[in-house]
Length: 271
Ligand SMILES: NC(=O)c1ccc[n+]([C@@H]2O[C@H](COP(=O)([O-])OP(=O)(O)OC[C@H]3O[C@@H](n4cnc5c(N)ncnc54)[C@H](OP(=O)(O)O)[C@@H]3O)[C@@H](O)[C@H]2O)c1
Image 1 (tube, rainbow, N blue to C red):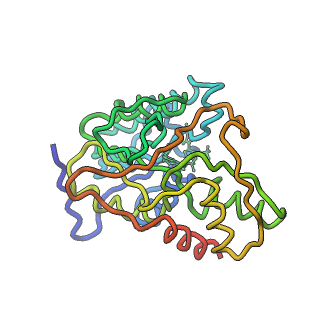
Image 2: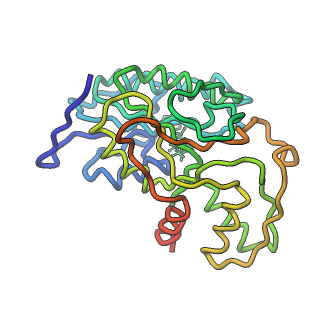
Image 3: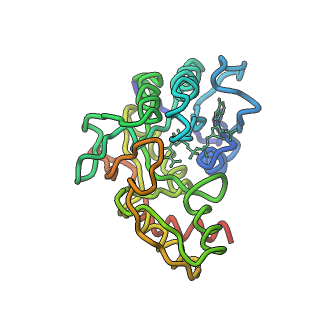
């Protein structure tokens, strides 16, 4: 079923869950008048509070601690599966956000919507089950390597480290598309005019984390060297896909600007 969301007067009743997170903040900025629900307003592991009639739910609340999910998969599932089910129970058109980590990373060409998921981490498994919990009547946005002006993300971490060190060690054997939350949030307006289902929406272009770190220092004018290391050297608890570039094979899919353009927009916002 397709939802026609008429908005001639900007009177849609939109709620954003996870409004305290980096994507949630961007969605609140892009959807003027949206009701922002932080964890304090609604812990999504609990059934939804009465929110009245809604025209659109933008569900950005999630357990995003990838390594922490290995130690507490039930806790992660309560948020990423149970929370998404609760968001669907609101009964309004739903946009749910998922991840490139639903893929194993064994491909070397971009993952498209018809590729079979095979998550290697507990986080990826909970997000994949969360896609099912969103239901057939939802838009499921798989995106990757999010960064924005708030919260904990790679850009903000590199800016802080780069200002206090001469060198940082960064993984150079994982490739993906770093996606600016402002660009993603704006693309959701286009998405809700399209049929429901799974959509891959990530920045154009791709890079490794080390290449991304170098670009961050270059754009920010920080003189910090990047020492390229392997995923094995970093020894994190959760496995990550070695390759997780996402592209859409669907007609009319929203296209985002290149990740470097997203980086510049983010740095401007942070300045
Ligand atoms: N970050 C990435 O690189 C990335 C990549 C691909 C896909 N995604 C997906 O994109 C979406 C947005 O991610 P993000 O980067 O914006 O994450 P984020 O910055 O970590 O924000 C997630 C938000 O959800 C909130 N939250 C956690 N548990 C909650 C609960 N039980 N009830 C209500 N709120 C809760 C968090 O609140 P607290 O701050 O209080 O914990 C936080 O404000 C998620 O679905 C994520 O899986 C993220």
